[in-house]
Image 1 (tube, helix red, strand yellow):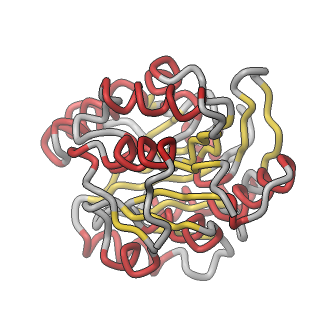
Image 2 (tube, one colour):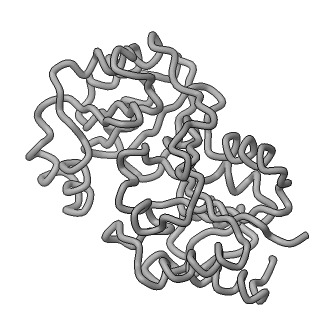
Length: 277
């Protein structure tokens, strides 16, 4: 069965290490869609963090954001489905996580709220690329717990970056008794969503809406929050820079994100020369 849709992660996959869409990738996505393929963004980012990518690739219609918490029709600017936190759960999780040394971010779709104090410290703790990203998109607010309680919109995801892997593990242990889905996309982070919310489940829901089956779907990713969507897709593909666990799931291993691996795959899909595993 021919591939009709490609679900693509953003960071570490669609984007290079500077978190940019290259001109080669822009062209490959444009050509793929012009030839009848659908391309879907499937990311841990929330909508407001995707502005530059959406602007670079306006042909892409669907966005699965915050690891599946919301599915957007970008062309109609509307939410198709959402599975956000129950307010009491997101508040409890945030309160516990704030006890540990890390940047704790509450995602509400149009805003990312963090605690005060990380505006400059981010440049001491994280890589320059990540620090610049947090300064641009993350908003310190003394009323962060009001956001965590859903008083300014439903909470899609809680995202945490800790000062060390050991600190992350201590924080993880502190929230194990609270029902939620937790994935890791880097050694120092945690990504938390409502129970059962993940990229794979939301991708499956979107495919049902579009009348597609897994055998018609290719999914491309690089890290732990991509496991569920690669497990769903008929053609799972891992980037050359992907975690070993993801490569083990994949039927194809592509070039790295610095080598435009997504463009490499889309060009071959369009030409009908992509190996199917």
